[in-house]
Length: 48
Image 1 (cartoon, rainbow, N blue to C red):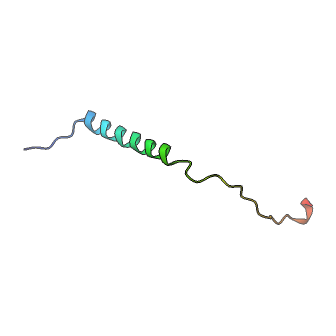
Image 2 (cartoon, one colour):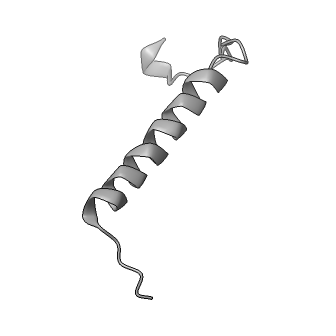
Image 3 (cartoon, one colour):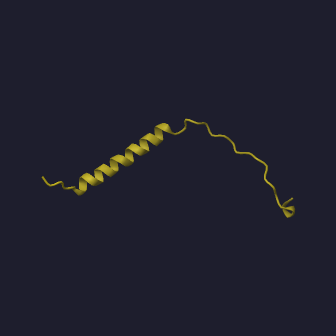
């Protein structure tokens, strides 16, 4: 038995993987609320 890969099956499989990853990212995204990043920054003397 010879195993052959048809181009349609390979592209379809890759498309399915991309869709699954995007669906997971969509569902999982937003679990942690966004926070402000605020910390003091040292400025050069000329900018003060």
